Structures are given as structure tokens and as C-alpha cells.
Amino acid sequence: MDQTSPKRRIADLLDGRSAGVLTRARVPAALLAAPPSGEIEVDRDGAALVDLVIAGGTIGAVRPAGRVAADDAVDLGGRHLWPLLVDVHAHLDKAHILDRAPDSGGTHPGARAATSADRVAHWRRDDLLRRMDFALACADAHGVAAIRTHLDSHEGQAETTWAAFAEIRARWEGRIALQSVGLVPLDAYGTDHGRVLADLIATHDGLMGGVTRASGGTHGEGLDDIDALLDRLFRLAKERDLDIDLHVDEAAKANALPHVARATIRHGYEGRVTCGHCCSLALLPEAEARERIALIADAGLSIVTLPAVNLYLQDREAGRTPRWRGVAPVEELRAAGIRVAVAGDNCRDPFYAYGDHDMLDTWRQAVRILQLDHPYGDATALAGPVPAAMMGLEAGTLGAGRPADFMILEAWSLDQVIARPQADRVIVRAGAVSSAALPSYSTLHRDGAFPRVASGA
Image (cartoon, rainbow, N blue to C red; front, side):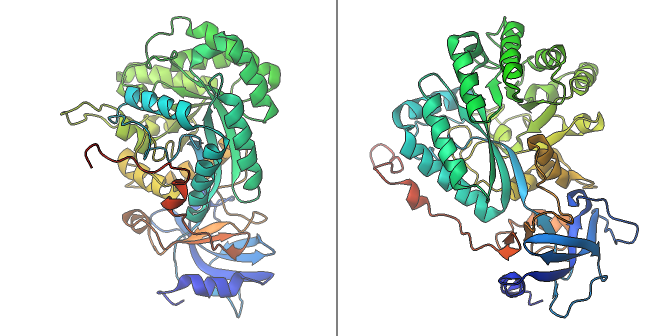
């Protein structure tokens, strides 16, 4: 294949045809729906060399390389080919307000205050639709298959945001699968708004959610009645048969996670609860950490770590270099049989000033931050089949009968995947090369919502 223009060759093969073959594609074994057979060559990174038969927008077969004969096959020459990836923890309603929101100072309290100010000032239907649509256009261009987004659901805001999300989900149906989670401080479930919100979430087929801190408070403080509040949340979820996804212990010192685990067991919700962040778990003494991880396993909790965002937020003090990374202890959790995923979290908002809704980039950062290498093993699963399973989807893997949704990278090894941003990746959806391009930031700046200007400029 012409190394300078893979997209054109792939487009010529797939576009407008009912079938085609891609030979010598290198796929991490963890991203195959079925484990590679003994006949398939697997490299030292754990990636298998396979041929893919594409038919009618689906994958007809995945075979050992060299087993499929076709005159018009495209030989990928051992390039990496991945399924489209899954972002199981995002905040589409917050995204891309950084240009106009007050400066947060890069701290968690500052981010809460800045986001609250922007929400009150701007979060109306058109604003939410414009920013969420922009975010999804970015994700589409980068090759994201599915997103679970948390939605700020404070009293007076929830109805507007959930209605806008319903519009955007319908608009993107068939391209990116979307799920939504109600996000409020946990003490909101002790008020009348808690039941109103639960009904709203059920109407939109969402998930119950929240953050394990009090309104206006910080993680680890102000929730002496946490067990009663969790019982209230779980009862509301159980009455409506809704799964739960919580922000938990996003701080160096916090202790809500064991309360969540015990509430999960108490209400028979094992396997239906996801906990994001869990930063403080990494700083516990070893014996205490092992005990807590065993409790998490007993409760069947799923854990999502957000490496880029928590690296940005945690342990930030003016004039002081941070001392820790802010991530959950992924290796120890996985060793205990606990389902763990990495996800993107915030994007260009006061909680995280950067990002572009690119799960491949998120995974590349996660490998470096969490040291998921030497060997890589099944680290790719954290951005593919594991978050897909959390969402109840068949995304994030390649296999016979699955949609022909994948990306082709100009890389022949996992270190090459990580070393470059893969800006020249080829995105294929339903067997056809995608023409989706990244949207211009200028589309965010209508109606006077222009970037802020420094005083005196």
C-alpha cells in the first residue's frame, strides 16, 4: 500500500462496494471479540496479525493473516487497526466553556465556582446544543464509538439540560451511542428535588448519579449522613430499575468509597454501580488499600480512572510542584478482578483546560501516566471492551458480525501508537471511510460568546 496515502486506497476499496478485504492488519488481542487462535501470529506487544473481510458494512470474518485470498485486497502491511473506542465518563454539558468562564486557577474548588457561574449565566438550550454538538463532532472525527456523559442536574437546570441532551442524542443516533447520568451533590437526594430528578432520569433512560460530597463542599468533608443519603439514592434507583454512576473520593483524603461499596451490597446492586475518580484510594497504606479493594470486589463495583484530568487537578498548589498523579491504583484493582476503564472526563472547561474528545489520545496518556507498559499486556482493553461492557454495548472490539467500525493507524507497534498523536488515522464507519473533519473553534463563538480578553488588552 502507498505509505503516503493509505486513506485513498482504503476508500477506493470500501466505498460503494458490498465487500472488501483488509489483509495483514495488526490488532491488539484485547480488542478482538474472540481470542486469537494458535494459528494467529501475536507480536511481543500482544497484537495479532489478521485479515478482515468486510461485507455490507459489517465484519464478515477475522482470519489469521494470509488466509484470505482476494484480488482487490488492501495490504495494510502490519499497520495497527483498532475498533472505535469508548469514553465511559465525560461531561458534554460543561465542555468548551473555558474561553468565557471565570478563571479557576486550576483547582477543584475554583473549577466548581467557575462552572457554577457559567451555568447560571449561559446554560440555555441553544448554548448546550451548540457545545455538545461541537464536542460530538470532535469525537466523531477522532473515532469514538460511544460516550457516557454526566449532566449537571441541579434544581432549576436539570430539565433544560436533559431536554437538550435528548435532542442531541437523537441528532447523533447511529453515529455515536450516548448515555447520560444525573450529576448532583449527594445531599440533593435528601431533598424533594432528588425524587423529581430520579423521575426525569428514568424518563430519559439514564443512570442515577451524583458526587460524594455536600453541596458547596469538598470530597471528604460535610457528609456525616452519607449512608442515609446513599440509601435514599439506591432506593430511588431501585424503584426505577436504574443503574448508578458516581463521582467518588476525588481528593487526596476522602473516605466515601467503602460507604458506596457497602450500600451496593446492602441494596443488592452488585454489578450495577460505577465509581469514577477514586483518587484517594492510591494514597492509602498498603494493608488498608488491600482491604478496601477486597470490599470493592465484593460489591462488584466498576472503577473509572480519569488520568489526564486528575493529573491536572489533584495536588495543585500555587508555587509548589505536585507530588502525586491523582489516579486510582489501576494495577491493584485489576489484579483483584475489578473492572477498570480509563476515560476522558472534562474537555476545555474549568475542570480541565485541554482535551479534544479523543479517546485514543486519552489512552496514550493513560499508558504513560499509569505506566501500563513493559509489557503492555491487555492495556488497550481499558479504552475498548471494558468501558463498552460498563455501558452494556458491543462496541470497542472487532469480530465477525460486528459493525465495520474501526481506525487504521500509521503505526506498526504500540510504542509507535503512543509516540505520535496519530492525527493521520483513517476512520471507517459501517465499512466506509469517514469524511468527518474536526470542527472549527469559530463555530463556538456565535451570539457574542467570544474568548475572554485579558484586562488592559
